[in-house]
Every structure is written in C-alpha cells, then in structure tokens.
Length: 400
Image (cartoon, rainbow, N blue to C red; front, side, top):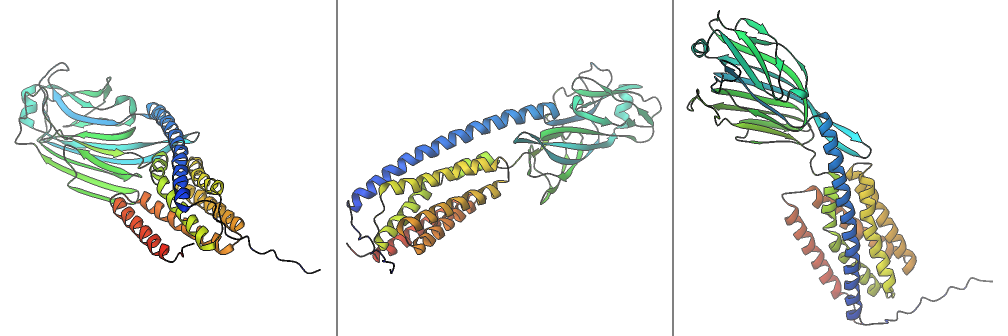
C-alpha cells in the first residue's frame, strides 16, 4: 500500500497579531525576571569569589609599598636626610592561586634599590647613622645586606620598616648605597620617589597591568603579558631637610584580573532583552511567511531556552575560560532552538534560518562584550541594521 502524505495543516490565525505581540511583550517581561534571578545568582557567587580572593591574598600578602631609604641621627629623630639619587628597579612575576573554582592573582617581585647620599649632609648628622627603609617586612622572602659607603651591614626588621646602623667615621668620596630583596604581594605595588632625583623602573609579566599614582610613567610598553614602565622625577626644587611629612610622589602599578567571569556574565545579561526581542520577532516573521501558527507556549519555551543560556554561561565560565564557555553555551542554545523550530514547523529551512539569525546575534553580543570604547557605537549600529532589515522584510509580508 502506498504511503499517503497528509496535507499541510492550514494556517489559521487564532488571534490578531496586535494581541499576540502584546502577549509576547508580557512574556519578555516575565523572562526578564528570570534574567534578574540569574544576575542575583551571579552577584552572589561574585561576592563569594571576592571573599575567597581576600582570604588568599591575606595569606599570601597584600599590596606592597616601598618608602625610603632615609637617614637619621637616631631612631627616634623626626628630622631625616633623603638620598640625592634614588634608583629602584623591580622585576615582577604574577601568577594565579586557586582555591576550588575561585582564583586570585598574586606576584613575586625582585627589588633592587641603589643611589647616593650627600657626603656633607651625612657628616653633619654624626659618625653613627640609622638608615630606614619602609616596606612590608612580613612579606619579604629574601633580603641581602645593605652596602653604604665602604661598609656592609645587616638589615633588622621592625613592624613596618627595615633599619640598619652604620659607622660613617671614615667616609669615601661618594656615599653610595645599595640593597636588594624579594617580596611577595597582591593587588598593587607602590614606590615613593624619595630622592632629590628618582629613577624607577618596573617590568615583568602580568595579565593586566595598569599604572597610576602621582605621576604616570615617562615610558611604558605592554606587549601581551610582558610590560615595562619607567619614571623619572626631579625634586631638587622642594625642601630637602627638616621635613616631618614631605610631599613625595607615589607611583603605583596595579596587578588585577581584568573583567572577571562574573562581571562578563553580568554585562552579557544587559543584552538579554534585546536578544529575546530579536528572536521573538524572527520567529514571528517565520510564522507569517511559513503560514504556520506557533502557539504562545512555544514562544515562551524558546524564550526560556534563551534565559537558560545565561545559566549555562555562568556555570561553564567557572570551570573554563569565558570565551570557551560562551562558545559552548551559545552553540547548545542555537542547536536547541533551531532544532525545535525545525520539528515544530516541519521545515528544515526555517530551522536553519532561525539558527543563522541566533548565531549572528550571539556573535555580535560577544563582540560587544569584548569591546569597551566602541561598544555603544557598535551596539547602536547593530540595532539600526536589525530594525532596517525587519522594516524592509515586513514589506514582503502579504496581508492575510
């Protein structure tokens, strides 16, 4: 017996398109409540991530601050002498520490400090001097001796600074000093430009370095994970002695993770309404052109799949990179909706068209997430092009 092919179900409109569009708008509002719930979940997990990150950084070491060296006549003296020249070189190497699914970026730094003091000023202080170097002493992992003049002395640790006592009874022509140490920390690296003339250079490897402080670098270079920056300042026009709180300039290099996964998920949620709206319009156009009635429940299920995309994105991004998570979540969503449209309407072509439209939407959304300066401009152009396409596409729709 020959197979009998059933005729296609005739297109029967159960309600006017005006009412249907109104109900679809209400559906979008309900779906946005789901998007809000996902944002709350993301925010909660981000706060948990901050707590764990703080625990890790507290154990490893907070931001590093270097202040000095300065010379005093005795440890309790309020007057001090700052160096004629101050040279500081820091080589930074960052790494990520993990605890379960959370991570924190920390760094190890090798610091070399050198320069010169004014000989006449040293003589005026006396034969015995005390040299202080403000630094986070509990975060120092290794330190060398201090070389000053023709002497080599050991550093001693106090709560927030290193100090050394040196005999200056036999001064060389140039009172040079130098020392180096290794220190670990997280977040930021501060250096006070203490000398009459200061030369600071910071270089190394980091995922997202940035520079701030009293003055920006004279030279900077960032190539991938490698960076370098140099500062030069001249403080000879400022007061150099009898200063209790001199106004020296701090420079700062920050080592922070860029936009982390939770922030990216939150940013992607901002485009949820637009994605749902464009998808609904595409499905509605398909319904009209294919002359197939799509019930409101099916619209809602498609919208639910678009919302589930964000839970997939959040879940996967906690275990793999955000880009990979976005690719997996968007691919699963596109395949689900396009396959659903194919089976529901009975047209492979309709499924492919909807899948293509969703792919373009998600690609554009990812580009917007990747951009910062031109995100608003590109988003506006995408919306304009989408609206123009729908306007001219609607002309082809015949009145029923």
